[in-house]
Length: 217
Image 1 (tube, rainbow, N blue to C red):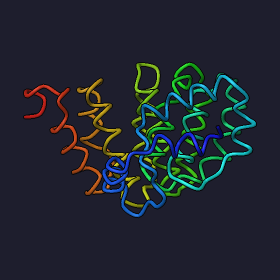
Image 2 (cartoon, rainbow, N blue to C red):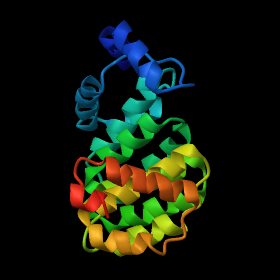
Image 3 (spheres, helix red, strand yellow):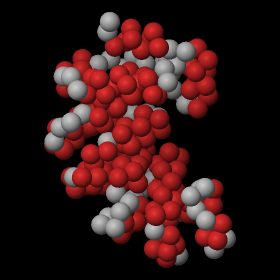
Image 4 (tube, rainbow, N blue to C red):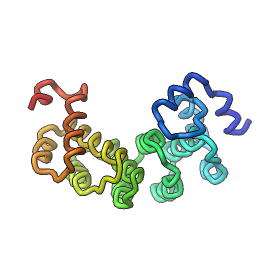
């Protein structure tokens, strides 16, 4: 059975409707649940994942997402993964594929090359390249070693479009959860546009991981 047939066999009409409601404007959604996609991606990542990516089709949302997950799970050196990401990123046109790919790339935290790659994605300046870079940073680099660089990168990022701005606000809230005092100090002088600043504060207050005391500050 080829991958497309496997995906079609896992499709659920009701889940397709639910997914479509979360992804306005995204076409050709089959309705396969993410955990099932992850099982397939992990299997492919242990096989000839490069050959899979070369032959992969972009006929559905799930086929594109599967490519991103395979890259995220593949065991390879940063150069190989970054080469695969360079070919894949232009296909991203929605938050789900963007975020799932970036968050799955757990090896990133062990390799400084991925920090530089996140910055290069942000510098590229398209809505989803910026979002991908920001999600990569907030998922793997909010640490003692990188927090100052992450905050600086957020402040200096050009944010073209809603999904880039939302990612920046989300990233600020992630930084606040782990480094509340440093992030609050940074927010007091950060050169964020009003919308992103206000959304950052909103997301901090909405976070269940932030104490009531800090929410009131």
